[in-house]
Each structure stands twice: as C-alpha cells, then as structure tokens.
Image (tube, rainbow, N blue to C red):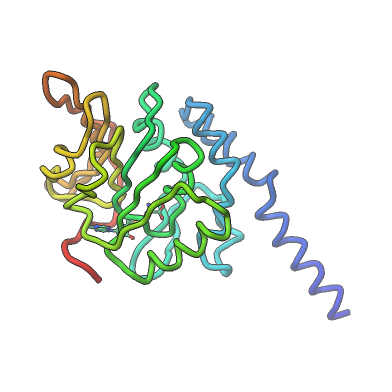
Length: 225
Ligand code: SAH
C-alpha cells in the first residue's frame, strides 16, 4: 500500500518535469508574444527544474519567478525569453556577458544560442551551485566570474551583447564601454520605484535606447557577498 503511494508520487513528479510540460510552457510563451524560434527551442532544451530546489521542481514550468535562496529569484520564463530575444535582436552574437548568474538558468539558455557565454555573480554560494549545474549538463561554453557586475568583465570585452538580470539605478558606464558596435545591452532600470526593461543598441554613431516595458527584478547591489 505504502509502496503504491510512493510510486504514484514519483510518477507525478516525473510528469510535472517532463518534455510535455516544457512544450506546454513554450506554447504559452508563443501565445504571449515570444516569436524568435531559436529562443523557444532553447527553452524546450533546458530543464528549468534542475535550476531550482527539488521541493519547487513541480512548479518549474509555470510562467513564474521562483526563490533560489539568498533572497534571490530565478526569473519568470517569459522574461527570460523576452530578454534573450532582445539580446539576439535578429543578429547572431558570438560572445555575450550576463550580469547576475543566480541559478544559472538564463546562462544555460544563452549557452544553447551563443558560442561563448560569460556570466558574473556577486554571491559566491549561488555561483558554486550554478557551476555544479553547468558541469552536470556539460555546458562547457559558460565562463563564470565571482565579481561585482557593475564592472563587467573588462579582459573579455568587447561583447556582442550584454544582459543584466538585476535592476540597476542607472546604466553602468563600464557596461556601455564593453559593448561592441552592433551589440545590445538589455537591462532593467529602476526609476521612481518602478522598473523598465531597457535595450541599448550601440551603433557607429553612439547609443540608442528603447523601452521594452515594465518588469520586476531583484536589485543590482554593489560589492561581493
Ligand atoms: N539570471 C538569473 C537571475 C538571478 S536574480 C537566473 O537565471 O537565475 C539576479 C542575480 O543578480 C542574483 O543572483 C544577484 O545576486 C545578482 N546580482 C545582483 N547584483 C549584482 C552585481 N552587482 N554583480 C553581479 N551579480 C549581481
């Protein structure tokens, strides 16, 4: 009797994290305006449940942010998709920087789309967990750094795209400098208590900003933790 019940629970767990569940999430993202098929394909390929605590894995394919410890969250899949679309901007970046590794999910999505992904995190504990996940999934094209992302990763610049996954008070000058011509910086900016997702494109002539809409991110903090 007990044995049977155990089996039932296990089966449900598998069902909740199955390929079918992931495909349903992708259908929903498509309905909600995500168009770039490359991005949707990456979302079907990356097991989001591996990036959250086991206790939350049955909720991993809901379109919602989830806690990852240290008062941080893994972003909502729609936001991950939207930011990734904006970063690719119809182009084909070869080398990108992410600020705010967190669980590592966004970096894993990028690793399916871009040859080299550089990611910076200020909380050592999260970086260690993410590193273990990348190794487990054999994502060998992700390079990690324990640092304050306001400074970017100068020795690897320029980048074809930069994505910040925490809300900044203003656009860090260092990140603009490390963006190559033709590249896009995607960054949530907090103004008067509200956050807007901004895309800044660098051209030969300078920087052009566009507003992609309202978002909610944890704050971008200074220093290391
Ligand atoms: N991209 C992550 C989202 C994590 S939440 C994911 O897919 O799970 C935002 C992350 O940004 C947190 O882990 C937080 O510690 C980190 N962060 C905040 N300020 C930072 C900074 N100045 N430099 C690097 N990382 C920062």
